[in-house]
Image (cartoon, rainbow, N blue to C red; front, side):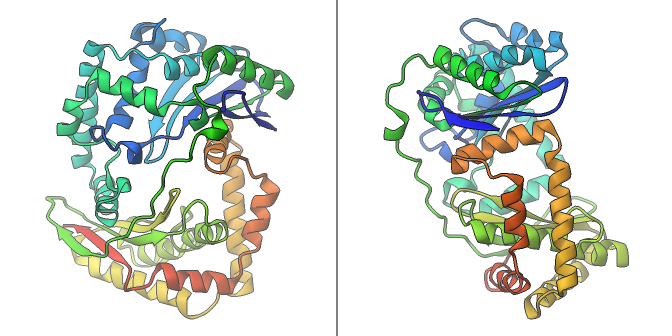
Length: 411
């Protein structure tokens, strides 16, 4: 892997991997939390409408540009990033990379196209009302971070999206899409030196001049939120009851605690059927179809959330069982045998996930934006192996402190 920074400030990483297929991604450090002064949901609408026209291509040309090559063009928005990414045959990688840079540097946001796409986004917002498991998590996060930029919904609201104009979209992009806020990553079966030269040439083409050298640009302000604490029930006409139990957790920059939290959540409610909550709530008692303990990481905080759906009569049984299993983790350290097995399981999951070229490419972009470098697999393994049973026990006491836990129920 080769990493660096272009003269205009774009961080980049190129890695040889795969065979016939190449992956590239342009990650931009701006998301929902950066919408102050704009209508809610603008970051997500920007992501949608970047594809609607540039100074050189209209929407039809953009939509078919990679399709004709058998490739794929996509994008997504989070609370902290907008990411454009493409998958193509490796010989077409330069075309894909050029398109990503063009979309980010010369969008036109045609008014008729923007109005049409606003309808699509509003339909997406309304569709969440039919998906309580997704709606409840967004509502939980909104309540947990009330009054803080992280509280805002990624999609915005129907009312706010309707008010966004083409001029506002252009202003947002000009302000936020600066090269020092970008990372460009590539994974392909090509020579790394040649890929690096191509990236540098691409950056020079699309950013011939920079208003300020990257080192002079300040990091965005990230203010740690004061988390609310609540136990609230909201009425929904659903067959199932949905529930989220959670609280704040270590941020992206609390490295030791962050790694331990990933391991703890995987043990408690990871994707494997042998995770504690899956074993007790689903396999043993048949109370739920699925339960998970997720860990979402931000620059200044994080969220650990236990999410489940069940019949109304089983909710309190599930909550009591969850409390009982958490107390076990808090009261005594895991045995050496169980901890070793849990670490191996997590390392295996990470290895399988990272074997996918697209996953690697996107993960590299996130790491560059967050840390300015990319940790290798050996370093990741060492950090996971270093977590002790006592550290996990102490971490579970802090994170799942009953005085700090919040609960939201849709019933």
